[in-house]
Amino acid sequence: MPRLAAASLAGTAIEFYDFFVYGTAAALVLGPLFFPTFSPLAGTLAAFATFGVGFVARPLGSVLFGHIGDRHGRRPVLVASLLLTGGATVAVGCVPTFDSIGVTAPFLLLVLRFLQGLGLGGEWGGAVLLTAEHAPADRRGLWSSFPQIGPAVGFLLANGVLLALATALTDTQFASWGWRVPFWAAAVPAVAGLWLRTSLVESPRFLELDYHARVPLAEVVRDHWRLVLLTAGALSVGYAVFYTVTTWSLAYGTERLGMSRTVMLTCVMGAVVVKGALTPLAAVLGDRYGRRTLCLAGCAATVLWMFPLVALLSTGEPLLMFLGFLVAMLAFVTMFAVIAAYLPELYEPRVRCTGAAVGYNLGGVLGGALTPVVATALSQGGRVPWGVGAYLTGIALLSLGCFALLPETRPVPRATPEAAEATAG
Image 1: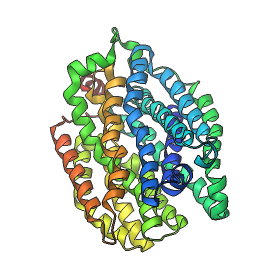
Image 2: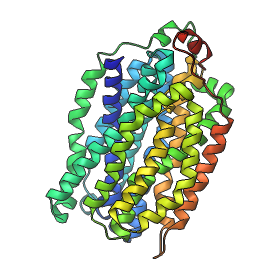
Image 3: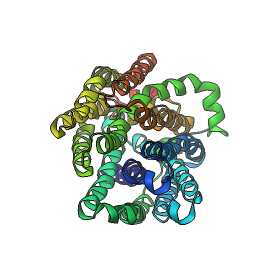
Image 4: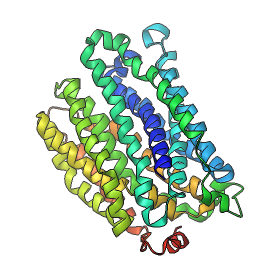
């Protein structure tokens, strides 16, 4: 289990590095380079729109790779998704800007972002299921939480590289070529991740199946459509909060508050470090007290914190901004640390890869794709952007209602792990 968990964590970290480096670049630099004929606001909105395309592609990726995972095994999904995402990320760093090739530049950016999202849509389901289906039932939350640390590690890597470049280079150098370096650098961890993943063995739960769904998506739509919609609605708040903190706040802080990129990235990265470190602890609590219980608690905390988050961000004081980000990330991790165990337990094993991944990534469309665009539009004017707080609170209330309608996958005592497997799904 430690070797498998480490390989899953490394793989998800690499793929989320690829995904996050684009989001940060969109907030900081892509607007003027690829949409120079737009106003600064319209350029940022256009860059965030290409960012959102990755989320739209993720459910399609979950359908494509979920079919492979349910029909042919979880392991092939991990290799194929990493190749696709890594290749698309390196290619983004090679795209000429608008000044060189005109409207072809943003079009290529759009296509490559779509391919990034397609690969990431398959990544999460394969990595989580391979770990969850190897894990003992009474420790499934703990072991499944390691792939969930991957997004935090990927975010820190992406923003650490961008922070170092922004500090070492002038604004002209960063806009000219420095922003490309993090995309080119994705090639190295992608190769290392492929080497790690080729040594993994297939999920025993998949090998035990007597029947594999011929068309997993059709079975999910026919028999589990309500569960998919509930899980998508439930998870949307996590995406909304995470991308508010890690993407929209960067653009708002640098463009509207006049904060330096270094200060904003440092505040956000500090909160994400704490979030990543506490993920296993929250997952252990889920093993002990139930997944749904923690999800409801995290949702309720989010409802209460969104207006204070906006107020603290608007002060422009780094310590207060960090406090706002930190509490938001604590609410987020309370929910998402247990999701890697919770979602697979909700779906039948033969359609688990498709069902869990589709629900997870549809939540990304609802909460992640639109949030930076909507928040940017709502934060115009010189006043505190209370509309952003209202928007996030509304999403949190929606998710709270969805979690309330989902069942608990109650953990069982350590002495009887077979009973947990019998009730899973």
